[in-house]
Image (tube, rainbow, N blue to C red; front, side, top):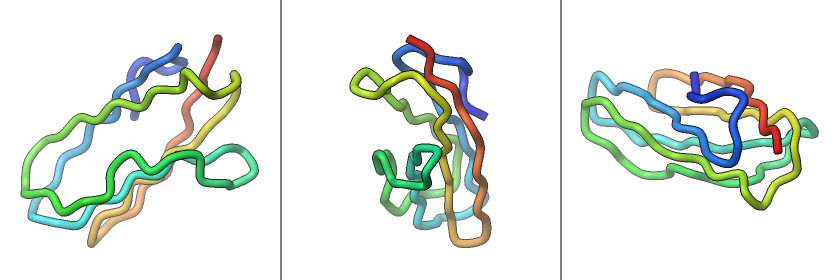
Length: 81
């Protein structure tokens, strides 16, 4: 899960890979439209942290989807300004 949540204007997303994998993290609005791709690259096994900045977005609910070779996880996050 991202931290902090709710956030303003930045939140951090932590994830761990057990083996090298292509990782993609997209942020979506409540209508399912992609707002931003924050990670789209091959990563080695290990722990990672990425930052999402919502400065240019209105307050509201957003979702991020983390996809690697063997898993897909979607979580919700709340931006409050």
